[in-house]
Length: 86
Image (cartoon, rainbow, N blue to C red; front, side, top):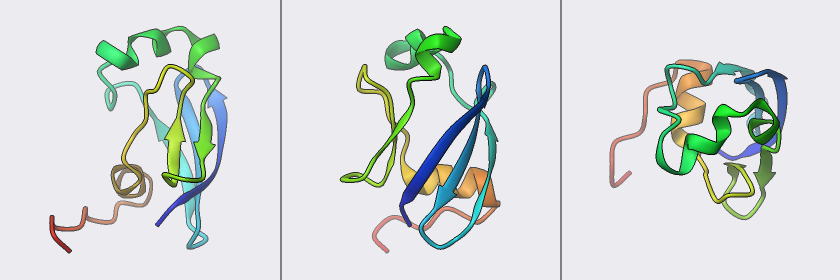
């Protein structure tokens, strides 16, 4: 599944839509460590620069930070993560 749309709905909250029609909100505090490549995203102005990268099918930020689309899907929908190799 790919992310097809993302909207910022709070300082660290996103609304994410997937190509299978499912969508939902994701609170990133507690989910992201906001360390390393994610550290600049502590600033709500930087966090708000999130966009969808259609090539990778996930969300990303201008500094190169991104999140695996399967992890996003699991967090938003509650679906289990697929096993490696499937």
